[in-house]
Length: 178
Image (cartoon, rainbow, N blue to C red; front, side, top):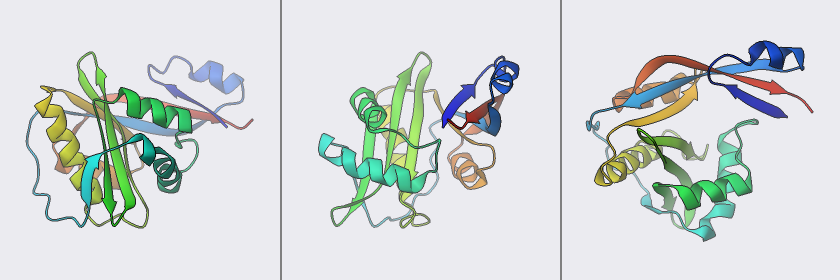
């Protein structure tokens, strides 16, 4: 499958002529304050990711997302190498989730927050997001953005609880079978 993120909505007609179909719309959200909600206890250890974690994180990513949202091994490794912060949550040696953020011209962008389906609803995502934001603030990052699917109301509620607000821009994700 091929996918295209049409950020400025300029490519849609050309993509449609070439057999692409709209998949979903993405919402961009921004956080400009340092407010965090109450997190509560989570039965997991949060720590920086290591190269040894990458194979398990790739499997976790594929369990947490469906195509075309899967990351490839090279993309995941590049995100780990280039991240301002890349954290994992683990329990008894088993990885439960991960989060990462990259530097942008205006601050940082959270590229991924993934939690294993077996650990969802246990506060792992909240703990990862709080720890990631705290790490970014320690690095003097003020402006933080992320994207989520317009239809993913669960993630939008999580991000809103952390003070993220949607910006007017919508990105259309297109796909084409190959």
